[in-house]
Image (cartoon, rainbow, N blue to C red; front, side):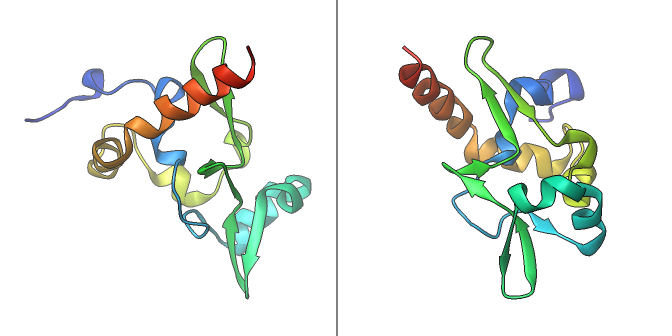
Length: 117
């Protein structure tokens, strides 16, 4: 079944692409590291000479889960790596992420809400 842009929730209501169990999920290039500037030390981890966005609790460390509103906010959106910039909403890659991992943001939101009770 084909899904159009209107069938895919806004990125801030979704956040699925920010979730992974892999520490090497979001590659950070030299240009990305420079763009992240002072936030790079906080958000980037290294595996040898390769750099990746740091993963925390199964999602990118830049992702903020807004428990009250149920939204997902990239705290480094303007500085985000190119791989994140290239992922277009409702693209094949986006739909693949949603198909494979759509339950992860919901579980994280539920956990976050339980911790703030």
